[in-house]
Image 1 (tube, rainbow, N blue to C red):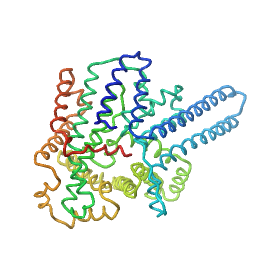
Image 2: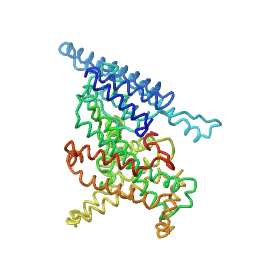
Image 3: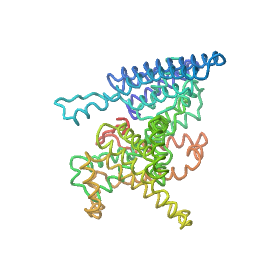
Image 4: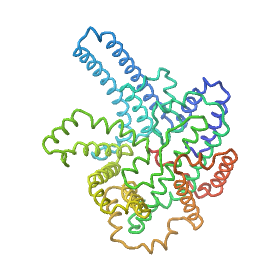
Amino acid sequence: MTFLSGGFLLLVLGLLTVYYILPRRFRYLVLLAGSLAFYALAGKGYLPFLLVTVVTVYGTARLLGRSLQRQKAYVAEHKKDLSREALTAYKKAQGRKRNILFLLCLLVNLGLLGALKYTAFLLSALRAPFQVHWVLPLGISFYTFQSLGYLMDVKRGKYPPEDNFLKYALFASFFPQMIQGPISRYDSLSETLYGGANFDFDRLGRGLVRILWGAAKKLLVADRLAPGLALLFGAEADSFRGGWVLLGMVLYALRLYADFTGGIDMALGVGELFGVTLAENFDRPYLSKNIEEYWTRWHMTMGSWFRDYLFYPLNVSKPFLRWTKALRGRFGNGFLSRLPLYGATLLVWLATGVWHGAGWNYALWGLTNGLVILLSLTLKPLYEGFHSRFPGLKATGGYGAFETIRTFLLLCLIRLWDCYAGPRGVWRAFSSLFTTFNYGAVARGLSVLGLSGGAWAIVLSMAALMLLVSLLKGEGSFRTRFINTPWKLWLAALALLLLCLLLGAYGPGYTASDFIYGQF
């Protein structure tokens, strides 16, 4: 079951009807029932894996919360009659117990994720005489990371654990975000998830516009480009070199953006129908001026998760602090003293790549991003020196456009790891950009991709519209600024619905493709 299926439409309509009929205090139960029904219908055997995560994380968080409460009460009670050393020893003993509980829960959930997602790859890499092929539950990486983020926040004392098991189960399983995120934080999502919002006709219109805008991206751009890209990157990839690689990587960037942001728009729109605010996941990423900025604007909830729960803890861990101190004492503040920072960055990016999938390409994609970011940071003094000599250059619109185009093309090159099978395939494609000069032939042979002139017109027109919306967005939501009255909302909804019905890629000759990030 996906956002574009009839079953999903019926589920949402049925839930909306019941949701706004029942008293507010029961409405979160409607969302929980709908979420569990959605996940049970999404795939046979998926639900038990989700329930393991829900039960283990909920139970562990409760135990951690009680331990923290007991510690605070004990310290408050004995603050005057015990020495500071005794209280410190008590806190350390309690902290060790919480660490053991936390690590056990982490082992269960990451072990489950790892076994399901990476066993087949590891057996293949080790050339084992047998293979195991397990079905990967829908969105397991998303709900596992969201749940573990909640657990880490509770362990740190950021907020108390949720006492109501059913409310926590809803947080972990809220159905719009199960397909491809966003990865929500408990303290922000819980503000609107449990309140049972009253019916609001304007909010319904805003949610519908966002859903249809996401559907238009998916049907008019992503799914129209999918068959041609499958040809360029598939079994006959060696027949398409040079200009075809350039064309393919640019079209793939367009397809990925339309597919992923389209799915997120639909998830946020469905949440808005119920008065639930999900985290924004994109902020015009293709307008970024460098790779580091791009990763603060693309898949923002994933980036912030790895930053807050992996990168920062690594940097302040005792081994990394000792390593940094030793290097600074010996080499000062130069390049070598930054090795711990570089090591933490590469480890995080390796984990990010592996999170996306099991395969060497995913790992190398992550490491490539990390290396490019580190190289950019290392060369930053040179950039600053250059711009200090030519202060007027950076202020020009032309230079800003150059930075944006340069960053976009660099991203396209890094994404070759997504497109071709194995490092050798990526290298052959990359090297052909500089050795096979067939760009004119490519321009004349676009029909080989299976898109008619009309289909290309639809794709390019929709791409231009997406760019225009990004450029006009500026401060605040495009809908808030330009579609801000009921008649504009419903007119926009009708126009988007007609676009999807009349120009979308579906029906005879088309097979609806799954959302790309749904596989993660």
